[in-house]
Every structure is written in structure tokens, then in C-alpha cells.
Amino acid sequence: MTGMEAIQKRRSIRKFTEEKIREEHRVLLQNEIARINAESGLHVQLITDRPEAFRSFLAHYGGFQNAANYIALVGKDEDDLDEKCGYYGEQLVLKAQEEGLATCWVGGTFNKKKAFYEAAAGEKLCLIIAIGYPAEEGKVHKSKTPAQVMRAEGEIPAWFTDGIEAALLAPTAINQQKFLFTLTPDGKVEATAGNGPFSKVDLGIVKLHFEIGSGKTSLF
Ligand SMILES: Cc1cc2nc3c(=O)[nH]c(=O)nc-3n(C[C@H](O)[C@H](O)[C@H](O)COP(=O)(O)O)c2cc1C
Image 1 (cartoon, helix red, strand yellow):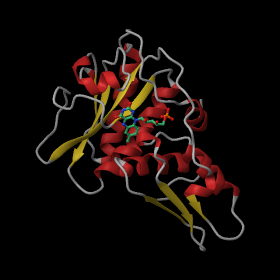
Image 2: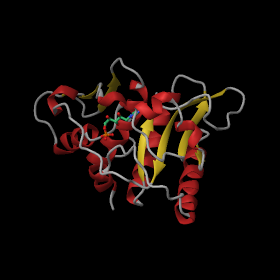
Image 3: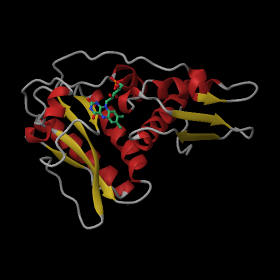
Image 4: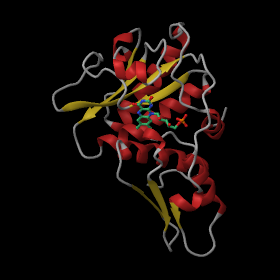
């Protein structure tokens, strides 16, 4: 499965089977996490068999079932933490999708007090990603139109609209899609976040999707 196929297939899944994460998947995810931590300086962790994090009124209200595993996005408490968590966390989401695992980003509807994770001095937990085997199909989210999330003058190259299309398929907190991609006259791309909960995490996520969709790496 290519990155773009994973983007097209992915939906947030909140109902999981009772199956534990298989050893092959655990190894694969741990390897990906090690690569990401080395590259980003984040302290991402895979936490398995800890359903407490999803035992709260909010988690129940949010519709989680059999959620027991998650990826904890932890890193240095600095300005770019949210965006980094989005960019690198979504790499794990897409990798999981390729392997038949399902995910859901969770910023609010989990039990932060009961969630288990490690944080060194100066680090904090940004948010988590629930992960497991899907027990539901998930739905395609309602989406803004390309025109609502882009600014570009004159002739627009196909790679730019392909990038926008991939960004619109990305998960965003409360499906807010509060981001804007601008094509500058010299052919560069700028991406900015609007105001809203976790909108900087969303920004990191949509930047990754834009890179995959446009086929251009290291754009930002
Ligand atoms: C940063 C972020 C935080 C999120 N927080 C929650 C959450 O607390 N609870 C929840 O059920 N879903 C949460 N979501 C999932 C979104 O509701 C979901 O991505 C959005 O509705 C789009 O649907 P889709 O992911 O199926 O395309 C979050 C998503 C993102 C990107």
C-alpha cells in the first residue's frame, strides 16, 4: 500500500476488537517509533494493554470500545511540540493503516490522569493515538472544499491541488480543518494553522499529507 492509498483508506476508528497487538506489529511499530524519535527528538511510546486511559466518562461518551493500546506523543515542552507530534504521529497512523491496524487521534476524550507514559524532566504529554484492530468501518468525514483551504494566484500546478486533496483527507480535531495552504509567486508553499483546539497538531498532520499527496518532500 502506498502512502496515498493509506491516506484514502484511513478513518478514525473508535471501536476495536479484543485482540492484543500481534508481535509482528509491535516490532514494526517499535522500529518506526525508534526511527521517529531519533529523527525528531520526540519521546514517542507505544503503550499496550492499558485500558485505563480510555476509562472515563469522556472516553465512553466519545464512543471508544475495547480501546486498550495507544501511542503516547511526548516531547520537550517547546513551541513546536504540537506540530511535531502531528507530523510524526501521522506517519505512525499511516504505517498502522498499511498494516491493517486502525487508529484514532485523541486529544480530549481520554483519561489523562490514568494514562500511563514516561516523561523526562522538561517533557510533556501532548496527546495520544488509540490503536488496535478495527471492529467498525468508520465514516468518510465531511470536508471543506479545496477553495476554502488554499490561496493561489494564476495557474495552479497539479502537484499543489494533489497536495490539497490529500490534506483534506487528513484527520483534524473535531474535524475543524482550520488550515490554509498558500502557493507563493515563487512556487513555494506556506501552511498556517487557524485558531481551534489542537490546530497546531492538525497543521503537522496536514503538512505530512500535503507532502505525500504532492509528491514533494521537505517542503516545509
Ligand atoms: C489533534 C486531534 C485530536 C483529536 N481528538 C479526538 C478526541 O479527543 N476524541 C475523539 O473521539 N476523536 C478525536 N479526534 C478525531 C477527529 O474527531 C477526526 O479525525 C475527525 O472527526 C475526522 O474524521 P476522520 O479521522 O475519520 O477522517 C482528534 C483528531 C485530531 C487530529
